Length: 542
Ligand code: NA7
Image 1 (tube, rainbow, N blue to C red):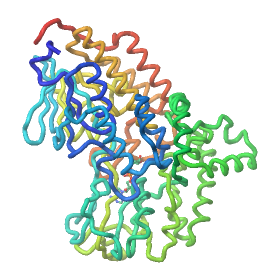
Image 2: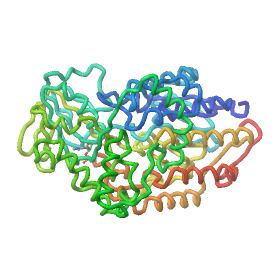
Image 3: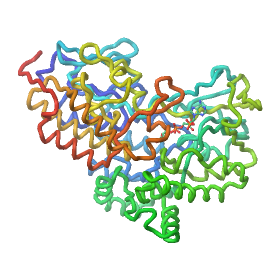
Image 4: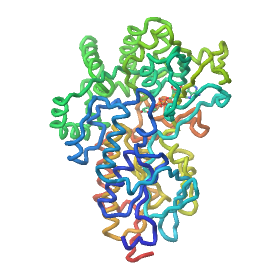
């Protein structure tokens, strides 16, 4: 647009994952000059980086993708109920091609700083080669799990064999066949990896600090006939997602745990357990996640399942979480995870009993034993949510650093904006819904696109959240999180990562209320024509 012609772009979008792709598509539809800057060498974000064996959706493929284009829904076939990473990446590549987005995407461009220029109401971004980019607006589309963290164990660099983090699985990774493999971590990534490599390694040693509750995924193929039926049901599927608490197709039971007889309850839980996907996580009564006694009962139900599957009772007990209840951390879904521990060439090391002292040239030295490996895999997670922001020097009005604003707890307005950071919108920033993430992305991008439409038509030069808006929103987010057992447990969702010095204490990283409520509040701001913001309009070029 002419008004912004002194700037390189109207909108710069940082990241080429699902958030960045949809943002670019919408900005171009509005006729804005937009460009995506991406650190990776191609599009895909999470699904570009995470190529470890077994990486896949835990949510039904046809609910965990975009709904905005009928043509895409008509054209794209899913081949599995829970899409494996290569297929998801192909879907993303297909989207990029279909909407002809490559021309406006720039890869191998890692943004190191983003500074607001108050004199021109614009952003100045600098990448790691020193190249600069200017725009009126920026959209951060950097992902909530994109900064892998290595464990804070001494000697990580001294290992002489091959080693890597799961989110950086090398394309030339050595074959695991016959190898002595060690893996640190037992989160969602480790669980998917371990079960996928079960037939490959010579031996596997799993170093576990905290066991996780998991439940069977029950993945199956989708044939042409079933895909036709899914396609017919798309409107209903997306409607269901939008109506539910965290945008999944599974609907919680309205009968509370203790209103059912023991017999009734067990029959109900067994039926859910037999279903694919998150049915057993989200199809239960909500009191499982707020009432300690209800949660303990449901946890015991799952503990029994683990005991039945793991042959060695000592190993089984180690695999059963003792310090947190079912569903108080993200529940990874598995396909044969427990059976791997029945293999004679697999060993589980509980590092609470036998702590890791260091990584050494030949493997891992614990207090009691030296474990020698050919390959060492770090499934040690991410500096989640704020990690993407901390990796960039964000500087707003009067030199305000985003890191400082969030130092004593995250503060946002709508999970989309931050005071002192004008003309900046966050897709999947903190305080947004983390349930069905593509649903959250679609909503947030649509909201930002609606604002951009307004901004373009009204010559908006400057938009900033207010102190009061940010205060009230942050209070609301905290209020929504009260009483949730998940917020009493350390996890990436509660902002804790013991490997990161600044992340030892819990913080409220996500919106804990129901998704329909979240959308209602954001819609209201739009309907009030953004009066909640400080807006400055101009008429001419700057
Ligand atoms: P997670 O869920 O954060 O898991 C990381 C795992 O690594 C977890 O078991 C950690 O134990 C373990 N870990 C981390 N640091 C150490 C050290 N220093 N020593 C021993 N063990 C360690 O990350 P994932 O990649 O599995 O999953 C992230 C999300 O991606 C997942 O929830 C899905 O939504 C997709 P801890 O639990 O901290 O004791």
